[in-house]
Image (cartoon, rainbow, N blue to C red):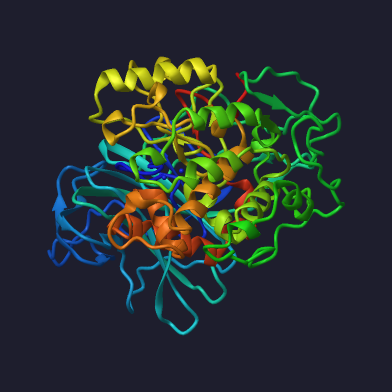
Amino acid sequence: MLSRATGWHLLAIAGALALAVVFGVLLPAGQIRTASAATVSVTNPSLETDANGNGVADCWQAQGQGQNKYAFARSTTAHTGKYAEKVTITRYSSGNRGLVIQMGSSNCGPPVTPGHSYTLTSFYQGSAQARFVTFYRNASGSWVAWTSGPLLRPATSWTLASFVTSALPAGASKLSFGIAAESTGTLTTDDYSLLDSAPTTVSPTGSTTVSPTGSPTGSTTVSPTPSAPSTTSAPTGSTTTSPPTGSTTVSPTASPAPSAPSTTSAPSSPPPTSSSAAPPAGGYSPTLVPAGNVSALPSSSTCAASVHRSSWEPRPDNYKPNHVLVDAASVHNSFATRPRSGSGTYDPRWDSWLLPRVDGQFTGTTDEIIQWAACKWGLPDDYLRAEAYTESSWFQYETYPSGRCVDLYGCGDWFSSEPLAARQTYCDGLATAGAYDYQKDYGAGLCPKTYSIVGIMSWWNPSWGFNWAGNQNGTFPFTRNSTATALDYMASQIRGCYEGWQKELGSGYQAGDLWGCAGAWYSGRWHDAGAQTYISHVQANQSSQPWLSTSFASQKPACSQAYGCPGPETLW
């Protein structure tokens, strides 16, 4: 998730912000990743050798693009050995700058195998935002840009970052990668490694079994206190849980296949079919209902009936929030007490029609919920798949065994300079409404601003113009607890923007620009630099469709020596 400034929904991207077919995690000191993989040799991985004295390690090169002012230099502040590589960006408008394995005609690029996925690791520190970037040599011998990883947070000490790609395209023979800065500040990197990730074994219940590996080249071996993560099965429906007031957990009596929604509050849906297929390339419904045609949008029940039912579930950890039905009246009351249109920044229909249409009344697999929300708001389903991948890699809400949420996988975006009193009001309100006090994990006045599979910001700073109860916008805890409510709400915000109803976006804003609205969902601005970067990530993900990758179901956030191994929420 990217760290958002002010605006509409703001966030920390799953961070999970990923470009193209990728999955990545940040691994602070003491964390481990488990996978079955073989080490691939990287030349000069610790950046020690610079035979020609040009200030760049042998078999590496300074790489970048866009409008920015930068400088590369050898650094003696190394993770191991004597040297690391540092890039400083003093002026930034767009693009990135970083160290990558040398391309061109050299033999520095490690050989790779088409169809294989790879785990990239490196230690980094610095004040700039950064991410992994990758390139491969194709069958004609040309080097082409491939994928980028999630955004890495600035780090004041050496931090291990890891990024798992999807399968390499046909014809790929060599790989180049590195970490690149994409904001003003500094970025120092050291100790790179590459693993050829072997297939992950998937059990019949849909859970994932992984095997521990050795530590990355150049890193210190970390022996976790807990044993290697065990196979985690999806809930069977036999355990009774008590969700917070205002929601209902729908627990089928059979194994976790898609269930019929509750007859008390969810629209009727056809029973699950015997299909186990993933969605087709390009999605089921690429249609975008034009602006000015909201009367043509299908009803919730119509969309429920149109969902292509399948037992395919690459995110079994989402099972519980996928089957939580919020109380629609509670949701509507929460929004009604926080009106947006009074100041003229939103069209009155935002309060009178759009938000009252958000109800989250659907249950199913993660992809079935995506289909339903896309249908309800007249958006292409693959667009919502790409948004969910960009924000969280499709995880609704992951936690460690203690209940602490996993940063970038359903929660994120942390406070910096906001007034303490306003933060404490917000965090105390979340504890009351959401049955969990995040301040016990992070400290007084510290709690996530954003939640869910699509990174919905609940925090509302009173200085932004509305004095809303609890300093939140009415989305919490509904969009944290329920995948359907999260996707329903996010899709509604995109539709309202697309209709031209979000007047706060100011000069240049116009109806009918889906990608402008996608960018505003992230930055709160209309086609500013942050929005444009985000748009490129979502577009790349929609084009590459990483959810169809053979490695998608095996991708999970890393285990932590301090907190244990992540999994589905179990405390509320």
